[in-house]
Every structure is written in C-alpha cells, then in structure tokens.
Image 1 (cartoon, rainbow, N blue to C red):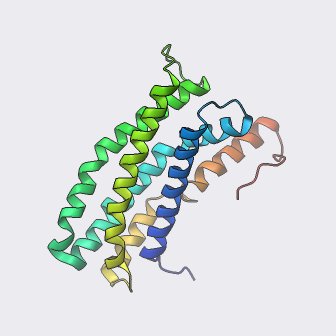
Image 2 (cartoon, rainbow, N blue to C red):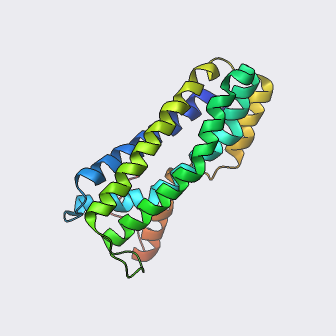
Length: 195
C-alpha cells in the first residue's frame, strides 16, 4: 500500500537538492578551470541539473507549498510568497546565463563567444547570491507547513506528484543516462552508479 506523500518530506528533498546545487556553484566558483576530470564532471553535472532542479522547485512552490501556506496562514504569508514569485524570472535568467557560461567553459557550446573566467566567476557569484536570498525566504514558509495534512492538502500533494517524472528528478536524469550508456555499449555500464 502506497504511503500518502508528506509535504515536509517533499520540502526537505527539494531543499537538499537545492543545497547541493549551491555547493556545486560554490565549488565551480572556487575551481573554475575544469582541468581535472573531476572538475569537468562536476561542472557538466551542474550544467545538466541547474535548470531542471529550478523548474522542479518552482513547480513545487507554486502548485503545492504556496496554496497550502496561503490556506493555513491566510494573509500573513502573502508578502513572502509575492517576493518569492517575483524572484522567479531573475533566477531563471541567472540559471540560463550560468549554464551557457559553463557550457562555453567546457567547450560544449556552439557559441563562438568564449567569455573570460572572471566574467564567468562573477555570473556564478551573482546567481549563487540570488539563490541564497531566495532559499532563506523560502525557509520562512516551511514551519507553518509542518503537521498533518488535511484531505484537500493531501490531494494537492498527490496530484502534484502524479505530474512528476518517475522516478523523480534528478533520479530520472541519472536513469536516462544509464539507459543511454547501455544502449551505446550494448551492455551493463561498468562503474556507473545511481547512488
């Protein structure tokens, strides 16, 4: 029997993922030259996960967290929700800019423009700072969401989860890479782990 989704678990999973993205951004700022294979792999994974993780976060907030917080807290949470929604376009722009800069750094971009490391580092710092402000404000909504869900809130969470890829992001991305690797090599992938 499937357990009903827990809003606190959804929030914590999203928060953990976003913290990992922030750590990767910090690492990219500190070690921007992807000379070592580890650096290239980390930057490549950041390029692949930055935008999808943001889209998943926005979806969770807009479709689940905000409606539940508004219903439970009434107008007390409206200023925070308004500010969070207002930050979406700016952060989407930062993510696209950083993704493009990192792709150029890795030589994956078709753009003839190479960009300089100091400019890329500044873009990363700006994006990280904007993300940190957003997630500090997001955390203010988490406390009112603890406790058991009403049937209507449970339905909201269940409906949202039903629209997510299975398995959920980022596991769906890792699984797709694993399947693609098997198709390319014609067999199981040696050393590719999903954990």
